[in-house]
Length: 125
Image (cartoon, rainbow, N blue to C red; front, side):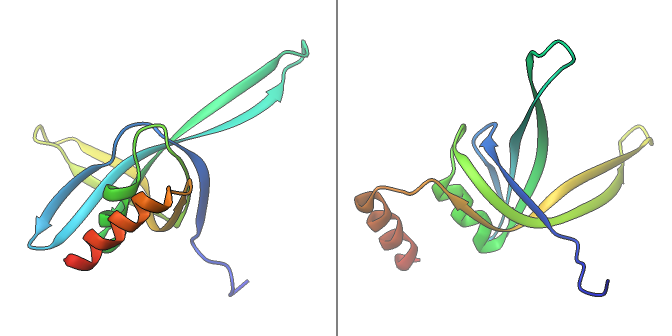
């Protein structure tokens, strides 16, 4: 049991373009929403699709790559860990949040010429 970790793997589609902010000089954070679908047949034999939405947060270089490569509707496979946190609103009520802290992702393959341009921009930094 010592080998078990806090690990999340999701395969889905982006619900909106990533929201990227620079929180310190050169330090970025990206927030995105990923939809995963599960299909099953109900008692009447009809196919039912259940969609779950997951809030995902990426930091640093991962956030920079998310900003460059992912767009609304894009298929994505990601890995991360489950993070639970709470905060207090302006009116004093306590809110609880569960999100996935992304550590790595795979996206639909990019056309070679676009990949070349992305890598050039990346190396110029």
